[in-house]
Image (cartoon, rainbow, N blue to C red; front, top):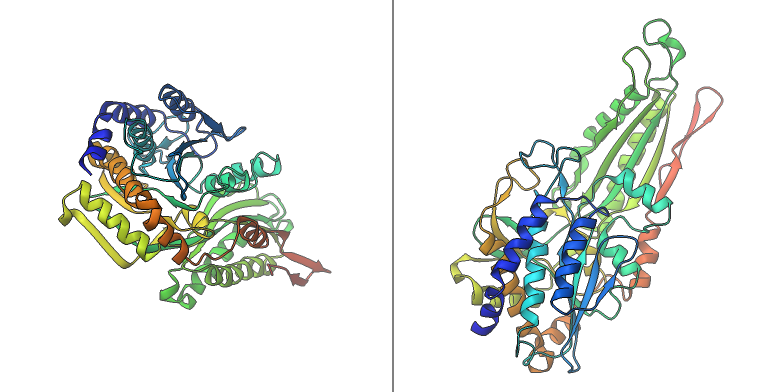
Length: 448
């Protein structure tokens, strides 16, 4: 595998320059136009013809070996997080790559450059789809809802949006490597999925000092709702890996006015979609009942978040082999029972095809935190690209026998993207949860 590793190493400076630019120009989901433009120009200089996503950032570039075989997609994510406390956050937007996506995108460019080197495709069959994808971090939910209502997007996550737009048609398998802390590289069993929630408590404003009896305090109703969720936590089964973590994004306008509108964003995360849906119903019941307790109302908006991700064992073992070709074997960690309680829209891809999402070190500080930095770009970017290239060679050589085996053995949750979208669309909820019959009688509506 030496020649493949050297093919990536040859483009080390290209990779590091991309990392530097993207780190210094962080943008949140569906706003990554500077990052898009930088990579679009770099891919074009390498000779790629791109299929642009259109009215959102991102693109695909197809590499065809000229020999029949499977098609494998390789993702690089474009978006950043928001963390105003980070010393290098954008002072206006709070955007910062405290997630490592800048390293992924730089690594994707390095892989693209290596695939153009003479002889690199000789052992491989099939096709490789390089995907620069936006909006993995499920943040700014209200902004994305505005995009959805305007018809710009259908789904909050970039990968399901790309699937919906047909940019993933014909793909049989997908991979990506996520940057993390430490100096190891490895893969686990999988991670949680989620439903994204926007919650708006609605009361009646009044003078907080002179006539509070004329008002209905939306903030108090919201506090009851949050406390009711907390009271539910002991009912969450440990094996389900449930996480519910709401934040109040708007809590009132003036201290001398009873708040009439309070906005909350949250996720309900879990290990299976069945468990997520069950807990989400409990959460919605708690939110609705808390509104009714104070004579308020609450608008519940549930949006399909991300599908739980489970890595196929044979694909994971193939990745472990590729990792050991690039980094010291003692730095490769395979934990087939390990489970992550975060979420990724790579799970949505995995709902219809084998999808592998290992991690690689190179960063320090808490992920998504104010002290997160890429301190080992060689590992996070250069070796990441090399591991992916070696994986592609192993998967697609000898007529693609290893890739075909992973694809044939995999049992997706859905037989097609159409079936997947039909299911997740049914998870959506958009309604006022309390219907009053007179002053005190109330009927609650909080989901299917």
